[in-house]
Structure formats: C-alpha cells, structure tokens
Length: 336
Image (tube, rainbow, N blue to C red):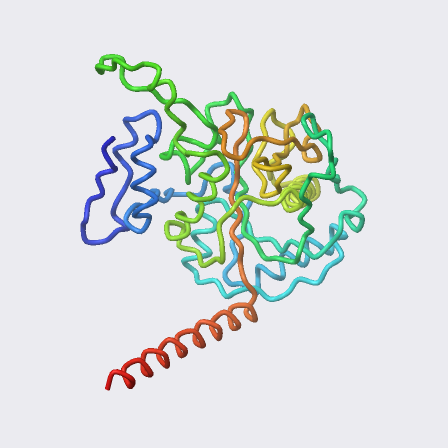
C-alpha cells in the first residue's frame, strides 16, 4: 500500500494532510507514514477554536494565571488540595492548548473517599468483570495534565463533533474501510480482514498519541489516555463547572459510548468507562487491548511538569551528557 506522500518543502508546518479530504478513512499505509515522520506532517490548525470548546478554555496569558484559576475552582468545589507550580508555558503553547480544546487541570493526590459529596465515584465492577480483584487501580498521584474537552458522542454518531485534531485521521471510533468497488480484488476475504485506521486497539491509540507530541507543539512528558481515576475526576470537574459556572463543558457520562483508560484487567485486557446505559461516569467495563471496538473512543491527556521536575530532568540530562563526554574522552586517551 502506498505511503503518505510527504512533500519536503520550506517548512514542515506547511505540510497538510489535504489528500485525505477525498478519502473516507485514514488508511493503514498512511498511519505508518505518519508514525515514521510525525515531524513532517501536521494536522491543520483551526482558524478558530473548536465550536464545542470556544467558550470553555479561559484565555490564560501565563502559567501563574492557570494555577490561580485551578486553585479558585477547586476551593469553590471543595476539592481540598493545594495547587503546586506549573511549568512555564509560552504564548504559542497557550494558544495551541486553546486551539485544540485542551484545558489544564491539576489531578490531586487524593482518594475517592475524600471527594466532594456531589462527585460521583467509580463502581468497581462491570458487565464482563466478574472478579474485581483483577482490576488494576491507579490512585491519583498529584499530576498536572492538559485534557481534551471535546464532547463524547454516541458510538453510532458520525464522530466526535468539531474534532480539529482527528478529523483528517478518520475519527476516533473504529470504522472499517474497503477498497473501491471498481478495483480488481480477487481475495475478498483478505479485504474484509483489513484493520481500522489505528491498528491494535489501545496500543495503536497510545502509539499515535506519542507521535502527536510534535504536532501539538506543547512541551509534555507523555501523551496518553487517562486512567479510570483521572477520567472520573475530570468528568466530575466538568460537571461541576457546567452546573456552577454555566459553561458548556461536556457531560462525559451522557452518551452511549465508552472511552479507553490505562487501567488493565486480567491478561491482555484493559478497562473502559463512560457509557450512559452502564453507569455513566461511574460505570466501567473490560475490553481486549489488542482489538478495536466501534463503541469505544478516546481522549488524550498530556502529562505536564512542575518547575522543580523540569529542573531535575535538566540536571539528570546534563549528568548523562557529561558522563558520555567523559567516556568518549577516556576512549580517545586509551587509543593514544
């Protein structure tokens, strides 16, 4: 299958995925090219923020304003935690967060029993989870994140609405693709075995997420899907903001679809959350991690840093570089 034709022109920022506009789905060869050269392909930035999030993301001018806003929201919502410092964002990064519909939150070091009374807690059982002892629980650890505020639709909807990030990558729900009917194809059984645009279920979603780091242009430690605990906490915060601040943050438990999480359940399985007919933001279920499911979508979180963590990372990087220079120097001396 042909790879995505990447045009080497003056700046990688000028490269678009315009060819995909005439193609119903992002094909397997295209995603291979995207993963191989993420620095040369970009998702075209919206001229204005996504409609669903236009009035959601505060117009922060610096990281101090982000911290002050999060602390004020948590104090009002009775989320008892001090908000630490946050990495220093550039104006370009703040604009990118807004353009792609990300909001910055601090996920506190907190157990569910300490949640505000109005927050909904996870039901640690599901339709296919008969042995809850196999569920991996990942307690909240106190982490700055940026999370997508995009609305979660029903699974049989055309896709996540106003999806600026994935509208040209075939959407977030799994869809079969097939060749044109007029193509000569003698092996229909092989054609029907073709995978979705992102291969291997959750594994593929995470692989694409790491490649998106360069496209987003936002410094972060990692791009991944939330843990169950993070997802539930985020959904509760969205609900509080919608009900108390009268802004239209999505109700993540109000639709007939699931979203991926990082939590495992038995060998080769992981947990999903959020289907309105199975508990909403409290309800979970298990799926096979290597498979694709048409009713399971996803949203990404970006792991951010505090200034102290960035300083520590820089120091560790400097030590490794110094050690490398010393080893190289000793090698040259021994050759002499």
